[in-house]
Image (tube, rainbow, N blue to C red):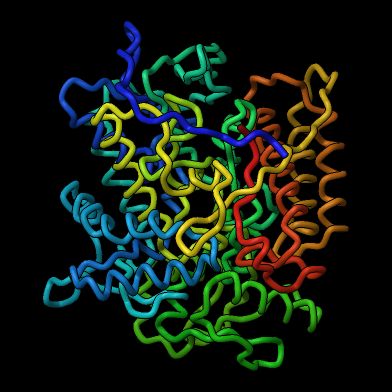
Length: 544
C-alpha cells in the first residue's frame, strides 16, 4: 500500500516568475479555452495556451449531443439532474462535485452564449432541449442538431485569439517542469523541432482523454492521454482510469474517428435492433448498460454490429444535419435504411485527481475536463455532462487562482486520494502500485514502426480490455503493452513516439486498475466478476 497523500492547505500564491506567465493552459478543448478566456479577462494576468495541434482541433469539436444543464432555475429540476448523474455513476460519484456541476452549470452555458455560441432555438426563440440516455427529462441544449462541440469550439477559439497573451500551436508538451516540489511550467517541442521551456506560476492540464488507446473510437487522433501520462511520470495522483466509457452507437464504418450517431437520436425515438430485427434493450438506459447489451447481442449472434432504426424520425435532415451528412457520405438514408452501429471508445471517466477547485496533489498544477478526476462521473459519465464539466471546473480553477489559493483542499475527489473511509457522501480511496514498465535500451524507432506499434496497442486494448474484460484478457493486453514499451526510447522527443509512449503508460495504468477492480461497475465490466461489490465501492488511486 502506497503512503497516503496529505494535500496542503491553501495558502497565498507565490509571485509569477520574471518573464513567465501567470497561467499556462495545456490543451484547447472546452475546459482549457473557457479557463483561458476567463483568466485573460482578469486584470493583469498573463495567460498562455499551448496545444499540440491547432486551437480548433481538440476533442470538443467532435462532441455532438450537447450540454446538459437545468436552465429553468427550478431547484427540483436541478436536484433531478443531480440524481440522474449519481445514478449513472453507480455509487462512485462525489456528491459535492456533482452539486457544484448542476448548480453552476447554467451560468456557464449563459457565459458561452454571451461569447457568441449559437444554440438551437424553437420558433418562439426559446432554447430547444433534448433528452438523452440516463436523463429523466429533456435538459440538453445543442447546436446544429448534433454539432454542439464544433459551435462551442468556434466561439471559444475566437475569444482566445482576442484575449490571451501567448498562443503556442503545433507545440507538444513533453513533461512538467518541477522545482522545489512545485510545477513551474513545461518542456515542449515546437513544430520546428526546437525544445523550449514555457514557465508559468500555474499550469492547467486540460489535454482531454485517451480514446486512441482503442482501435475503434469516436476520438480524434490527438486524444492520446498526454496529460495523464505526464501526471503519472511526475507522481501526481490519478484515479478511476479503469472506467472508460464506450458510446453505444458509433456508425460501423471504416472512417476514423468513427462517426457518432448521437444519443439524441434515441432520445427522439430511434430503436436498436438485432440481426433478427428485434428490439433488445431500453435505448434510454445509461451508456454502459446499452454498450454491454449491444456487445452481448453481437457475441451471441456472431455479428460485427447491430442496427439503429431511425426510419420513424421526422425531418431527420433538418434536426440532425451533421449526422445526415455523415450518413450520406456512407451511402445511407436514415429514412429507409437501418444504420449499422457498434460501441466505440468515447470518454475517459477518470484521470488526474482534483479537489473542487481543480487543484491536483502537486502545487502549481491544476486539471480540468476529461483529463481530470473531479468526482463528477464516478464509474460512468451521464450523457452530455462532459462539456458541462469542462466549463464548470475550468472556471473554478481560474476563480481559485484569482483568490490566491495554491494547492489542494480536502474536497471532492481529493478526499479519495487521502484514503478516507467510504460513507454515503464520501468515496474512499485505495492506493495501488503503478504499472512497472521496464526501462528500454532503444535509441529511436522508425515512423513506420511507431505507427505499427500504435496499432498493436489499440488492437490489444480493444480485444482484451474493451467493453468486456477478464483477468486473463487484462494480462494478455499488458503483455503486448510490455512488448511495445521495450521497443521505445526512454525519453522520446518526436511527437509520434511521445504519443505512443503516453498511450502505453496510460494503458498500463488502466490495466493495473482494471485488474485490481474485481467487480463489474459502470463502464468497467468483468465477466469473471459480473456483479458490483460494496467492498469495492472506492476509488483506485495511482501516484502520490
